[in-house]
Image 1: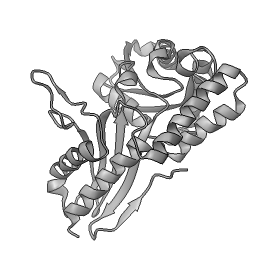
Image 2: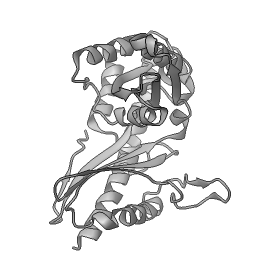
Image 3: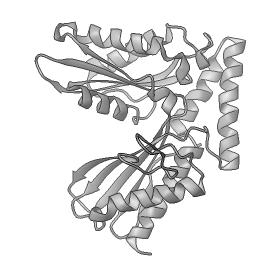
Length: 290
Protein backbone atom coordinates (compact mmCIF):
# COMPACT_ATOMS: atom_id res chain seq x y z
CA UNK A 1 0.00 0.00 0.00
CA UNK A 2 1.24 3.49 -0.83
CA UNK A 3 2.46 5.51 2.15
CA UNK A 4 -0.15 8.19 1.46
CA UNK A 5 -2.94 5.63 1.89
CA UNK A 6 -1.31 4.17 5.02
CA UNK A 7 -1.20 7.62 6.63
CA UNK A 8 -4.82 8.39 5.75
CA UNK A 9 -6.05 5.08 7.14
CA UNK A 10 -4.05 5.54 10.35
CA UNK A 11 -5.44 9.06 10.84
CA UNK A 12 -9.01 7.77 10.44
CA UNK A 13 -8.31 5.01 12.96
CA UNK A 14 -6.83 7.51 15.43
CA UNK A 15 -9.86 9.78 15.05
CA UNK A 16 -12.19 6.82 15.66
CA UNK A 17 -10.21 5.64 18.69
CA UNK A 18 -10.18 9.16 20.15
CA UNK A 19 -13.91 9.62 19.56
CA UNK A 20 -15.04 6.23 20.91
CA UNK A 21 -12.47 5.19 23.55
CA UNK A 22 -10.64 6.91 26.36
CA UNK A 23 -6.93 6.25 26.91
CA UNK A 24 -6.12 3.75 29.66
CA UNK A 25 -4.77 6.41 32.04
CA UNK A 26 -7.96 8.50 31.78
CA UNK A 27 -10.34 5.58 32.23
CA UNK A 28 -8.31 4.22 35.16
CA UNK A 29 -8.37 7.63 36.85
CA UNK A 30 -12.17 7.65 36.70
CA UNK A 31 -12.43 4.05 37.93
CA UNK A 32 -10.12 4.79 40.86
CA UNK A 33 -12.10 7.88 41.82
CA UNK A 34 -15.31 5.85 41.86
CA UNK A 35 -13.67 3.27 44.13
CA UNK A 36 -12.60 5.91 46.67
CA UNK A 37 -15.63 8.23 46.45
CA UNK A 38 -17.42 8.45 49.82
CA UNK A 39 -20.69 10.14 48.83
CA UNK A 40 -23.60 8.21 47.33
CA UNK A 41 -24.32 10.93 44.76
CA UNK A 42 -20.66 11.11 43.74
CA UNK A 43 -20.58 7.35 43.17
CA UNK A 44 -23.76 7.47 41.08
CA UNK A 45 -22.42 10.30 38.91
CA UNK A 46 -19.07 8.59 38.35
CA UNK A 47 -20.85 5.31 37.58
CA UNK A 48 -22.92 7.12 34.93
CA UNK A 49 -19.73 8.41 33.30
CA UNK A 50 -18.16 4.94 33.33
CA UNK A 51 -21.33 3.42 31.85
CA UNK A 52 -21.22 6.05 29.10
CA UNK A 53 -17.60 5.07 28.36
CA UNK A 54 -18.50 1.36 28.21
CA UNK A 55 -21.51 1.92 25.92
CA UNK A 56 -19.41 3.98 23.52
CA UNK A 57 -16.69 1.34 23.49
CA UNK A 58 -19.09 -1.57 22.88
CA UNK A 59 -21.07 0.21 20.16
CA UNK A 60 -18.12 1.98 18.49
CA UNK A 61 -20.05 5.24 18.80
CA UNK A 62 -18.66 8.61 19.95
CA UNK A 63 -18.40 9.11 23.72
CA UNK A 64 -20.01 12.55 23.41
CA UNK A 65 -22.24 14.15 20.79
CA UNK A 66 -19.76 17.03 20.68
CA UNK A 67 -16.85 15.43 18.85
CA UNK A 68 -14.88 18.62 19.26
CA UNK A 69 -12.48 20.84 17.45
CA UNK A 70 -9.92 18.59 15.77
CA UNK A 71 -6.29 19.19 16.70
CA UNK A 72 -3.41 17.39 14.98
CA UNK A 73 -0.05 17.52 16.77
CA UNK A 74 2.77 16.41 14.46
CA UNK A 75 6.44 15.60 15.11
CA UNK A 76 7.62 14.86 11.61
CA UNK A 77 11.07 13.97 10.34
CA UNK A 78 12.67 16.26 7.79
CA UNK A 79 13.21 13.19 5.56
CA UNK A 80 9.72 11.76 5.91
CA UNK A 81 8.61 10.79 2.40
CA UNK A 82 5.18 12.45 2.39
CA UNK A 83 6.10 15.58 4.35
CA UNK A 84 4.90 17.92 1.60
CA UNK A 85 1.52 16.17 1.29
CA UNK A 86 0.69 15.75 4.97
CA UNK A 87 -1.77 18.64 5.28
CA UNK A 88 -3.73 17.38 2.28
CA UNK A 89 -3.76 13.81 3.70
CA UNK A 90 -4.88 14.97 7.16
CA UNK A 91 -7.77 16.94 5.71
CA UNK A 92 -8.85 14.11 3.40
CA UNK A 93 -8.82 11.69 6.35
CA UNK A 94 -10.99 14.04 8.42
CA UNK A 95 -13.59 14.36 5.65
CA UNK A 96 -13.83 10.56 5.48
CA UNK A 97 -13.87 10.17 9.26
CA UNK A 98 -16.65 12.73 9.63
CA UNK A 99 -18.90 10.53 7.51
CA UNK A 100 -17.65 7.08 8.56
CA UNK A 101 -17.34 7.33 12.38
CA UNK A 102 -19.42 9.64 12.27
CA UNK A 103 -18.12 12.88 13.73
CA UNK A 104 -20.46 15.81 14.24
CA UNK A 105 -19.69 18.59 11.73
CA UNK A 106 -18.30 21.32 14.00
CA UNK A 107 -16.49 23.68 11.60
CA UNK A 108 -18.51 26.90 11.44
CA UNK A 109 -17.36 29.55 8.96
CA UNK A 110 -17.73 33.11 10.23
CA UNK A 111 -19.70 34.20 7.14
CA UNK A 112 -21.06 31.02 5.53
CA UNK A 113 -22.05 28.89 8.54
CA UNK A 114 -21.32 25.19 9.07
CA UNK A 115 -19.10 23.70 6.36
CA UNK A 116 -20.69 20.27 6.87
CA UNK A 117 -17.47 18.22 6.82
CA UNK A 118 -15.29 19.53 9.69
CA UNK A 119 -12.99 21.31 7.25
CA UNK A 120 -12.53 25.06 6.96
CA UNK A 121 -10.11 27.84 7.75
CA UNK A 122 -7.83 26.60 10.61
CA UNK A 123 -10.13 23.57 11.01
CA UNK A 124 -8.64 21.06 11.61
CA UNK A 125 -5.89 22.88 13.48
CA UNK A 126 -2.46 21.46 12.64
CA UNK A 127 0.57 22.10 14.84
CA UNK A 128 3.94 21.13 13.40
CA UNK A 129 7.33 20.26 14.83
CA UNK A 130 10.02 19.31 12.29
CA UNK A 131 12.71 17.01 13.69
CA UNK A 132 15.57 14.98 12.17
CA UNK A 133 14.57 11.60 10.76
CA UNK A 134 12.12 9.83 8.46
CA UNK A 135 9.14 9.14 10.70
CA UNK A 136 5.89 10.84 11.70
CA UNK A 137 4.53 10.90 15.25
CA UNK A 138 0.92 12.07 15.24
CA UNK A 139 -1.47 12.84 18.08
CA UNK A 140 -5.11 13.66 17.45
CA UNK A 141 -6.99 15.57 20.13
CA UNK A 142 -10.75 16.11 20.06
CA UNK A 143 -11.44 19.18 22.19
CA UNK A 144 -15.04 19.78 23.20
CA UNK A 145 -16.55 23.24 22.97
CA UNK A 146 -18.05 23.32 26.46
CA UNK A 147 -14.74 22.93 28.26
CA UNK A 148 -12.96 25.16 25.74
CA UNK A 149 -15.41 27.94 26.64
CA UNK A 150 -13.89 27.96 30.13
CA UNK A 151 -10.39 28.79 28.82
CA UNK A 152 -8.88 31.52 30.93
CA UNK A 153 -6.03 33.97 30.46
CA UNK A 154 -4.73 36.49 32.95
CA UNK A 155 -1.91 38.92 32.29
CA UNK A 156 -0.49 38.89 35.81
CA UNK A 157 1.97 41.39 37.19
CA UNK A 158 5.48 39.92 36.98
CA UNK A 159 5.91 40.29 40.76
CA UNK A 160 2.99 37.91 41.43
CA UNK A 161 5.15 34.86 40.69
CA UNK A 162 3.80 31.44 41.65
CA UNK A 163 1.00 33.02 43.69
CA UNK A 164 -0.34 34.56 40.48
CA UNK A 165 -0.43 31.12 38.86
CA UNK A 166 -2.36 29.68 41.82
CA UNK A 167 -4.91 32.50 41.91
CA UNK A 168 -5.49 32.28 38.16
CA UNK A 169 -6.06 28.51 38.25
CA UNK A 170 -8.43 28.74 41.21
CA UNK A 171 -10.46 31.55 39.62
CA UNK A 172 -10.77 29.58 36.37
CA UNK A 173 -11.85 26.28 37.91
CA UNK A 174 -14.27 27.96 40.34
CA UNK A 175 -16.37 28.82 37.26
CA UNK A 176 -15.95 25.43 35.56
CA UNK A 177 -19.07 23.62 36.74
CA UNK A 178 -20.49 23.92 33.21
CA UNK A 179 -17.49 22.10 31.68
CA UNK A 180 -18.57 18.55 32.69
CA UNK A 181 -16.26 17.89 35.66
CA UNK A 182 -14.20 16.07 36.77
CA UNK A 183 -11.69 18.04 34.76
CA UNK A 184 -8.17 17.97 33.46
CA UNK A 185 -6.47 21.35 33.86
CA UNK A 186 -3.58 22.58 31.73
CA UNK A 187 -1.67 25.55 33.16
CA UNK A 188 1.05 27.51 31.40
CA UNK A 189 3.24 30.59 31.76
CA UNK A 190 5.12 31.85 28.72
CA UNK A 191 6.40 34.87 26.83
CA UNK A 192 3.11 35.99 25.30
CA UNK A 193 -0.61 35.29 25.56
CA UNK A 194 -0.67 33.11 22.44
CA UNK A 195 2.33 31.03 23.54
CA UNK A 196 0.88 30.48 27.01
CA UNK A 197 -2.49 29.34 25.63
CA UNK A 198 -0.81 26.90 23.25
CA UNK A 199 1.32 25.41 26.04
CA UNK A 200 -1.68 25.10 28.36
CA UNK A 201 -3.48 23.00 25.76
CA UNK A 202 -0.40 20.88 25.09
CA UNK A 203 -0.19 20.21 28.84
CA UNK A 204 -3.50 18.33 28.54
CA UNK A 205 -1.79 15.72 26.34
CA UNK A 206 0.42 14.49 29.18
CA UNK A 207 -0.49 11.16 30.83
CA UNK A 208 -2.60 11.30 33.98
CA UNK A 209 -0.35 11.23 37.04
CA UNK A 210 2.78 12.43 35.26
CA UNK A 211 4.66 15.26 36.94
CA UNK A 212 6.84 18.07 35.65
CA UNK A 213 10.53 17.10 35.69
CA UNK A 214 11.42 20.20 37.72
CA UNK A 215 10.76 19.42 41.39
CA UNK A 216 9.33 22.84 42.28
CA UNK A 217 6.83 22.71 39.41
CA UNK A 218 5.89 19.09 40.20
CA UNK A 219 5.10 20.24 43.74
CA UNK A 220 3.03 23.12 42.35
CA UNK A 221 1.02 20.67 40.22
CA UNK A 222 0.26 18.60 43.32
CA UNK A 223 -0.63 21.70 45.34
CA UNK A 224 -2.97 22.95 42.62
CA UNK A 225 -4.63 19.53 42.34
CA UNK A 226 -5.42 19.61 46.06
CA UNK A 227 -6.55 23.24 46.07
CA UNK A 228 -8.81 22.89 43.04
CA UNK A 229 -10.53 19.85 44.51
CA UNK A 230 -11.15 21.80 47.72
CA UNK A 231 -13.34 24.20 45.70
CA UNK A 232 -16.12 21.62 45.90
CA UNK A 233 -17.44 22.07 42.34
CA UNK A 234 -17.73 18.28 42.11
CA UNK A 235 -18.74 15.82 39.41
CA UNK A 236 -20.96 17.56 36.82
CA UNK A 237 -20.93 20.63 39.08
CA UNK A 238 -23.11 18.85 41.67
CA UNK A 239 -20.88 19.63 44.66
CA UNK A 240 -19.78 16.06 45.45
CA UNK A 241 -16.96 13.88 44.19
CA UNK A 242 -13.79 15.07 42.46
CA UNK A 243 -13.65 18.40 40.65
CA UNK A 244 -10.27 17.81 39.00
CA UNK A 245 -8.56 14.56 37.98
CA UNK A 246 -5.15 16.08 37.29
CA UNK A 247 -3.23 19.32 36.75
CA UNK A 248 -0.29 19.69 34.37
CA UNK A 249 1.88 22.78 34.13
CA UNK A 250 4.18 23.87 31.31
CA UNK A 251 6.21 27.02 30.88
CA UNK A 252 8.33 29.04 28.52
CA UNK A 253 10.53 32.02 29.20
CA UNK A 254 8.63 35.29 29.35
CA UNK A 255 9.29 38.96 28.66
CA UNK A 256 10.39 40.90 31.78
CA UNK A 257 7.29 43.11 31.56
CA UNK A 258 4.80 40.26 31.05
CA UNK A 259 3.52 37.32 33.07
CA UNK A 260 0.79 35.63 31.00
CA UNK A 261 -0.89 32.73 32.83
CA UNK A 262 -3.13 30.53 30.69
CA UNK A 263 -5.57 27.87 31.85
CA UNK A 264 -7.02 25.33 29.45
CA UNK A 265 -9.71 23.02 30.78
CA UNK A 266 -10.75 19.64 29.44
CA UNK A 267 -13.77 17.65 30.61
CA UNK A 268 -13.40 14.06 31.84
CA UNK A 269 -13.55 12.88 28.19
CA UNK A 270 -9.91 13.63 27.37
CA UNK A 271 -10.06 12.24 23.83
CA UNK A 272 -6.56 11.78 22.45
CA UNK A 273 -4.82 9.07 20.46
CA UNK A 274 -1.30 8.74 19.03
CA UNK A 275 0.66 6.67 16.53
CA UNK A 276 4.05 6.63 14.86
CA UNK A 277 4.36 6.05 11.11
CA UNK A 278 7.65 5.23 9.42
CA UNK A 279 8.58 5.99 5.81
CA UNK A 280 8.51 2.26 4.97
CA UNK A 281 4.82 2.12 5.95
CA UNK A 282 5.33 0.49 9.36
CA UNK A 283 2.85 1.74 11.98
CA UNK A 284 3.19 1.73 15.78
CA UNK A 285 0.13 2.68 17.83
CA UNK A 286 1.19 4.45 21.02
CA UNK A 287 -1.96 4.99 23.11
CA UNK A 288 -2.89 2.11 25.46
CA UNK A 289 -6.53 1.29 26.18
CA UNK A 290 -8.22 -0.86 28.80
